[in-house]
Image (cartoon, rainbow, N blue to C red; front, top):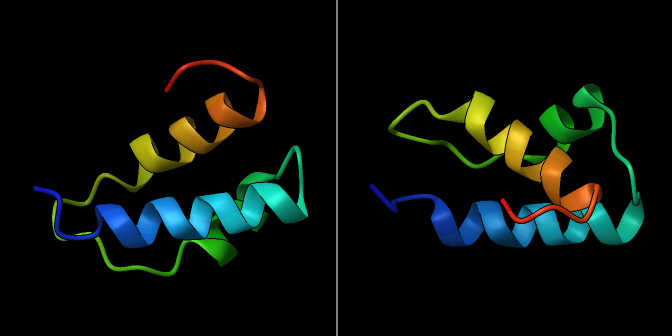
Length: 56
């Protein structure tokens, strides 16, 4: 829906600047924005893909 998108992008950017290859636990701790759609699994997958240099 885009409700949390900007906050998720900022949190992911900050996380990846701090840790180039974050664990699931680090991602969960960093991504504190509430997502109304419940797409947390997709967000985690996207952060992992970005850390590996893939297009998310």
